[in-house]
Image (tube, rainbow, N blue to C red):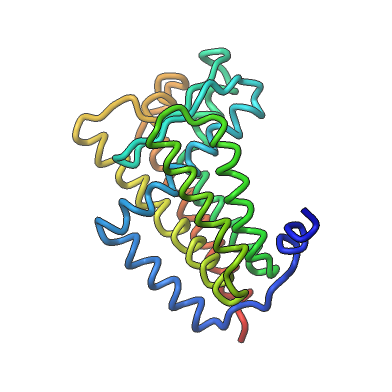
Length: 234
């Protein structure tokens, strides 16, 4: 445990700004391609559901379980009052969660805590492992946690730093696209989304909640990109 704590808290020299930009371009290409986006969407969904879980717990709701599906959708079940601020906050937390995780990750990278960021993802997977309720979700959580843990434990510091930057860029760039996909699904007749449930609870139109999700993700992208580039080595 002492060695693990040393790895988590040890700081690393920031990457050169050129490498930071290259990794950002790679993440953009992955998030923009259909196959690449489907792959990284599983990580986005994992953090989306983690956002629901965290806020539900903070609001005093009882989390019943999490499901992650092969189409990169997910579901978090919680028990408590069906209406009120706790339920609204729980529903509101999902879509901004990956973007906020990316922005916080960028701040951690700026401070040199690349390994700490990766171990935070491992810790998130460990929590979700207790809550996941389907086999595919179990597979996603186990594989994600195992790969990130192995990378942060055995890889050289330069590789850990590069991987952490790539993860952060991917979250920042894929999170806004997930909101766009949400609205596309609604246009095709899909209902029951977080935005639709928020509209039913508050009377505020679902489109306003979609816009709020997108603005939160866009703001996190700007903040995270600035933090990554300002913290980069000149």
